[in-house]
Image (tube, rainbow, N blue to C red):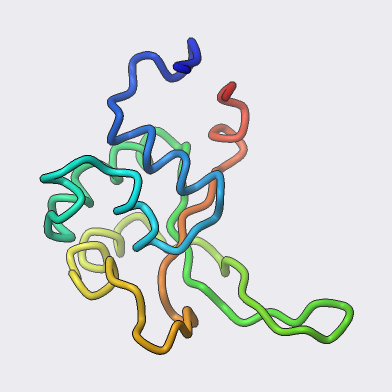
Amino acid sequence: MVYPATEDMTSEERAFMINATEIDVLPGVRGDLPEPLASASGAELAAVLLPLVDKGWIEVCPVVPWTAPDGSEGYQPGPAFPREDLPALLADDGRWEYAEDRDFTGGLTLTLTEAGERIPR
């Protein structure tokens, strides 16, 4: 189903919005993208993502370690990277691949901004 607020988005843009809603690690978006974009370079993927950042809907954040109140360890998004840093970060193809050891620390994740959260889904 396409919601009125997202009807003007491409399916590729919606995939990035879904990834940000899920606060998934950056490589996770590839599974929501159609080919050939799913196998594209970081620079090509960034060309879809950066306009969503520029609209103020998505932030790109580092993945940082987190400890829950019960002591279990996990991950959470850190503070958003400045916009001017994003082209170089996102052009790194390695950032779009899962870490072999599944340690996500230092990887990238997408989060919705307040404006992004107001878009009906």
